[in-house]
Image 1: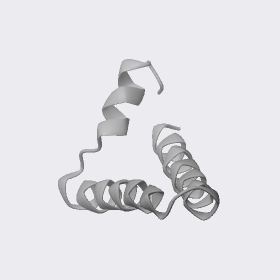
Image 2: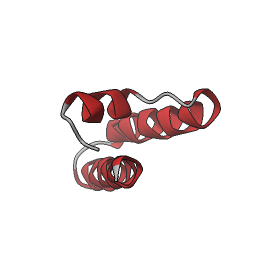
Image 3: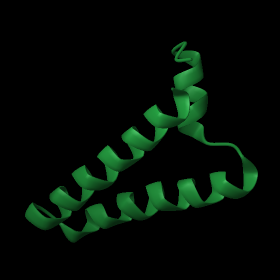
Image 4: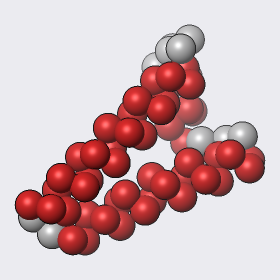
Length: 60
């Protein structure tokens, strides 16, 4: 459940930032890059900040 929620949140952040970049400012793409880099580093380190946040919220 925790990993499914993480993927859902990451996908939501990416879609929202792309929409914001399209309608408001291309600088929102930096947020998209940030989310992507976090996903990439978590593949190698097995640690993700959002996982820590979800665990503190008692998501199992």
